[in-house]
Amino acid sequence: MRRVAVTGIGVVSPLGCGAQEVYRNALAGRSGIRRLDAPFADRLVAPLAASAAFDGAAHFEPPQLRMLDRFSQMALFAANQALAASRNDLSTVDRSRAGVFVGTGMGGTLSMDDGYQTLYREGSDRIKPFTVLLGMHSAAAAWIGIEHDLRGANLTYSTACSSSAVAIGEAWLRVGSGELDFAIAGGAEAPLSCGSLKAWEALHTLASIDVQDPSASCKPFSKNRSGMVLGEGAAMLVLESWDDALARGAPVHGEVIGYGLSNDAGHITRPSVQGQTAAMRAALRAAAIDASAVDAINAHGTGTQANDSTETAAIKAVFGARAHHIPISATKAMHGHLLGAAGALECVLSLLAMQHAVALPTLHLVVPDAECDLDYVPNTARQEVAARTMLSNSFAFGGTNAVLVLRAA
Amino acid sequence: MTPTFERLCAILRRDYKLAPESLTLDAPLEGLGIDSLGTVELLWNVEDEFNIKLPPEPVQLPTLGDVVHYIDGLIATRDTALVEPAIAVVPTLQVP
Image (cartoon, rainbow over all chains, first blue to last red; front, side, top):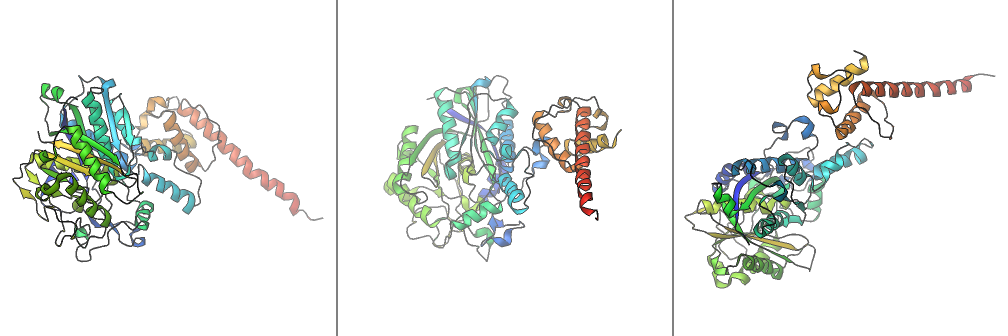
């Protein structure tokens, strides 16, 4: 395998737009979770969301905008931003060896929701002619490929909450193996429709509102955690072979050095210690490092009852007694759960944290769950954490566990 | 400029941000950046604007003039269809 450098980062998220703004807000422990401001908010038991301050109309001309669901708008914006940051004008890239890898859980669900309203609520048969193109999961990857003339593999992964970790991992495999020289990889999600929020609510996985402070409603690893908060956004990385990146003097934000997958093969929602453990071990094997080389972890850390205790047990299984000495950040307390984009955003935050020698905080952790007894960097970022190697965990309904191993530049 | 062409131009200026001077009857749609997919969307808006129903058959409309002609044809069909039931109804109103 060739070394694979991350040369560009693009992000639009509840924590802001662009790597620096997102990092500053994460470092300061600002939550992007708010009371949901939407016409249907009163139909939700707990109207909470982590929205991104993003207006597609400010970035795309009307004819193109009408063909882009919000998830594609954010994906394309983040990809453009990542490419600009990489300072790669693509003039020397063989386009047939340049790919796009995008993860999304719900694709163009806002457009589908819109179409259903027309059909079923309004009783009209006049569905927008682009509904299929807006709604298809592969739209975001397709538009990135079109925009930048990237003619190699153009793939979309939908493995629920691990989708974009899978996308980055699969891109890493292809650039690392030499099949591709260049890839844009990440995830995008825009799930804040009435239909999707009601569907998540029906599963009883969403957090109840913290009445004192709605922005503190997601409390990973906490004794009083009550669930997750849905968020929206996109995060994209530019991946290039390390040698190519160095040869052209590219900015390097770090490298992907490993990627591990496992499948719980047990239950459609209930996480498994064994499955999560297997994914972390597979990632370490792929990176050819020992568990002792891992300095910090970005946890999946959803704030649900089931995930946080299971993940804690899995981390203990992989790291043994050393698990207690590894800083573990659950950044979803700040940016919410971006579903198919979560893994990519957390990968970005991990790279930025290592770049700045910081462990990002797990907010709203006052009294930990008795089963969650590791070092979760509670409430305040920790400075001077000389982490060189991090895991970024992404687990999912359906049981597809994906773990990325990242190394500082 | 016919009323149909005027209303079509209003859609093109509003939704496609096209310059008024580019909108002539012989202007090719492709040249205005409206490909076959864009034409599908344009005709969807045309249905609303002109209160007409497009037939399901695909149609070739290379220029704006062709679109105008097509719309005028559908308006005429619609108006004929509106008149026909009225004529059909008349006999039922006749008293013996």
